[in-house]
Length: 321
Image (cartoon, rainbow, N blue to C red):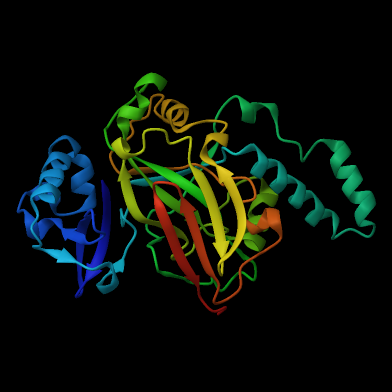
């Protein structure tokens, strides 16, 4: 099923999509305490999902809302945590190439500098990347939803998008094995990890971060739905694509992930407990950002990420401030 968090008449509501595309207000349809919000639904997965399924099957038109009459929020408005991986080889290789050329462009002889950086191996993808997943922790308090406007951070002149999808942890666990990891996934959503690229380049000169390059209000866009795992039988057979103002910018496949969510879960949970509501980003697909394609964002741009079976996440870019 598809679940979302919306605002309607000034109140936050958790909804499920009906077969005809309307939104069933779950708390209005049933007083069960585990239907009061998305976090509660996730924590009570074994009880909540059968109840929601029954409400959808029995509904005769009560407690329904039109998508046109609501404002979508991030489906999990305040995740328990956000960990974002770098799992697509093409993206990593192309991002390193762009970084090398950007740095070389600041030197007196850019081509000579570029060749020197390339020969040094400093911008090569290290062998360990193929052996273990790498991630950073995002700011869980800065999430935006479908249709939301992304605020242009005052400290940046170069704003970028990143095409990702994400898994949401549904069951608490530690030392989770790869073969049991999918049982701990509640569902999947679309994730656009908006980035202030000029600030990110500054962050990483100290070989830490990203920090301020990712940390600004509204920067973590997710949604519109969390699609429960039973409706995504193969999360690695999905086409991913991005459009800006209706023009396709890049197309990729979820199956190109070097380290799949199951491997990421096993890696993360080594002597560390994962909790319901933890969000794991896939990392950016190849050709999934302006840092690779050269098409950065401008005020007023409409950015859409579409993933098979998950939906379309649309955001508008705000004015430079």
